[in-house]
Length: 152
View (cartoon, rainbow, N blue to C red):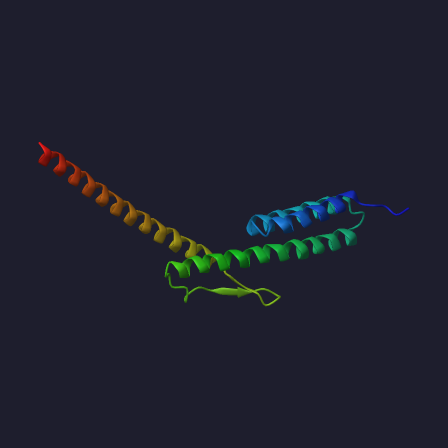
């Protein structure tokens, strides 16, 4: 009877479940999938009998989990660029990198730059909204006090 690795079955079940979750929470799903694969391979690497087996497992871990981390990076890049375009932030000077499959994602430097620009723009929007709300509240208070003063 062949040896059945129950840890591998559990990982496959987790990954299948996480793919369903990915339809609703794609970022969370990709992170959890990559971490599950890494944990599984870490366990297998610790049980490896010889150097060659260990090296092949390390390579497989890097390949499988790495693809998910790249996909997550691409997803975050697209999300940041979409938000920037909605807020009319210039995205022309961003630097892109290509992976070995030809998919593009923002470099770490460009991601952090765009994230900072988005946060700054959101802060400005909040400040403007607060000013508008305060002006409107002041207008209502002034109108109420005028009405009360005229009634006396």
